[in-house]
Length: 136
Image 1: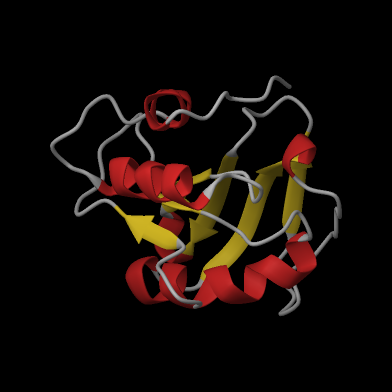
Image 2 (image 1 turned 45 degrees about the vertical axis):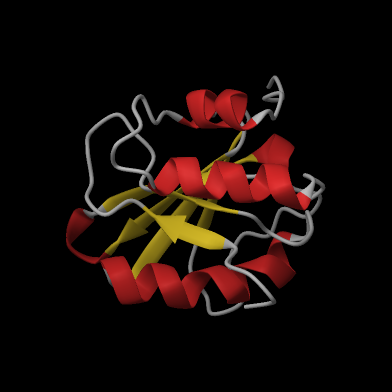
């Protein structure tokens, strides 16, 4: 997964908050999902489909490389990915922009996984980490 962690998860799930964060290496979703799927599936089970914000990515495939359907939403909050896993679990991950400076991205990853820091909504985490959230 590279020289340092690029996906983190909160120790437990709370409604209305992100379940963790992901810092992809690029805006090419086809390439990036291969790195994301294994840790998400180890933690939450098989991914059945994804929902993403159109604005976050340069590529917009209908399916992930392993055939998982992808739903695109132009109205969805930017910097958010929802992985719908086995048994109806919806996992909400903050997507840290790929071009974010490493020290800032690491801060966002840590905040999204910190059970002690609240609130942990996507916009809150980005702002606290020093990342200006993009508008839709």
